[in-house]
Length: 244
Ligand SMILES: Nc1ncnc2c1ncn2[C@@H]1O[C@H](COP(=O)(O)OP(=O)(O)OP(=O)(O)O)[C@@H](O)[C@H]1O
Ligand SMILES: [Mg+2]
Image (cartoon, rainbow, N blue to C red; front, side, top):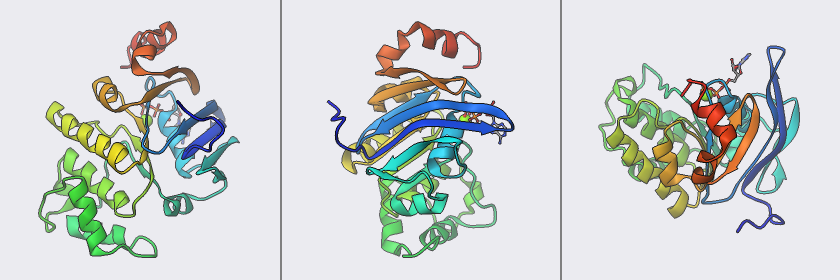
């Protein structure tokens, strides 16, 4: 049972965001404990990626607060949050066209001081089972290895909170199974807190401890996947509007 008096690893309250003169997020709150996986679902355009933009520090919300280990991080920049151990992956796994896998890892090692050692990078590659030659152009990797490479770049710094935006997009079923094991290892063995936006409910079913549903910038349900699948509001917003 969650102890509400103790600070969670990561939480936000009352996040409101406007973009282009329109309200995108309205009063979003969430909390993630170490070792916990929070699934986030919602129709296309619901505001899931925008929420990660705010939580990772890429854009500032109009109002609301964000805390990491109980300390306010609302005013910290993206790189300052990264230094604290908050990692984020993007919906499209973009890797630099001109670099090899080894060069991408080196750039990540030297992204900011203190630099990571080669040993840390090797450890991260083993952790995600990235078993490919370092001389390959990074742009030649297919989706699963791209996503593993980008995750290794975060994990080499021993991040303790991950924001994963549709990490299984573009994967075939056997790859999703492998990814499922990886996410579970990160949360249950390394005790990393994970918030994961994902449309593939079969993945959330095995990894998510709880799920929140966002529709039109608002939270419309919270609970176990089984609970939210029985919620009539979720059905109407997520399954009956034809966007999923
Ligand atoms: N920079 C921006 N300026 C104006 N509107 C934006 C901007 N970025 C996103 N939006 C709008 O905010 C809303 C939420 O978009 P967002 O990308 O967060 O949705 P999402 O839930 O991640 O959708 P998807 O499932 O398609 O990835 C959309 O209506 C989108 O058009
Ligand atoms: Mg999105």
